[in-house]
Image (cartoon, rainbow, N blue to C red; front, side, top):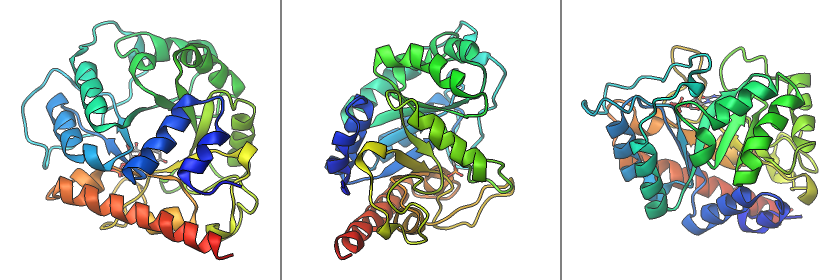
Length: 301
Ligand code: BMP
């Protein structure tokens, strides 16, 4: 049984990205992933400059890289998903080049939150081609399980030779999500069939382990050959949610009670009126302390 992030690296013999991520988490003592949902290239880079020391992972959204004006505060907008935008060819490489430089400087991985959801053949194109060429620069991306195994097979054909990894969206943080019950169970089974490419889940709680249904996740130990990294969005220390169905829980709740491995935080860090560096530190400390508390409870069992 492995409990620490560092110990768990050996549970991913086929996934270098998982081992790298677990190593970074342990070295930097942070399980914080910042979701950069900003529309201007300059805003994205500004936030990463500030949060870089406190994160293990940057969750990137497609951005409008042409506009270099505007301040961050009060100008947040979510990128809009467009059908097959990924295969249109006129992308500015500048942002990707700068992201790479920041990544090397601060030692974090990049997670493109693309939420693929189409048949295998289409997602292959969306992942490899078009403006964004996601597979070239994103260590991790994610997919909905709804189309069936073909979506993973398609993404794997592109991503695996490049050493990339995938997360499966098996639960969602928004109110009324349909990703529950047997849907979530089927998503877990799908991930198990593709352990050579799938390293974990986007979910609100640990979904595998010797006692994964327990209300107290300190009771749930990792089963080494059934280990997945769980990343949880819907994390906020100051708000209960937003007006569009988002629901927030604290890092302590998510990591200690629900056994999640990585907290994903967006507006809680760079929302209007927030001090980005202070908030990044606050979430990093809160997430890490919850992990230490979980370890202590487990070792006292
Ligand atoms: P925020 O902390 O600002 O609410 O942002 C949450 C981020 O996590 C967003 O990028 C959103 O797309 C993502 N997300 C989520 O909120 N819930 C999910 O179930 C899955 C997500 O990827």
